[in-house]
Image (tube, rainbow, N blue to C red):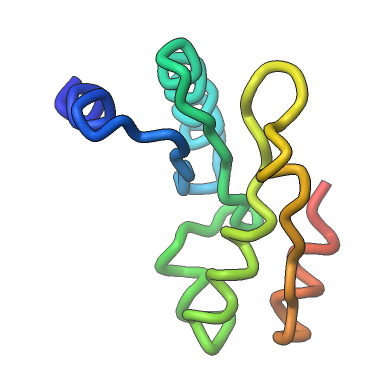
Length: 107
């Protein structure tokens, strides 16, 4: 509720959800995307490899700043209907071969 209030106060337009890649994280992402979407906030899900979280990923796929950027740039649209043009037109610049392989093999 505190986060929702802050998003309203600051007129947040887009949120990237970066939960663990497990069943609990999947449920939380859907729940939060639904709540935020009802407020007009665009939601995207950062897709870590299954069973990984941000810390695991940043330790295993280096350099962390670059590899995390890849995941953020390729985040999955969780809204209803079509993504906004800003989101649809995003391009992913992948310079890290391991990160590129992990992102490319995601369903």
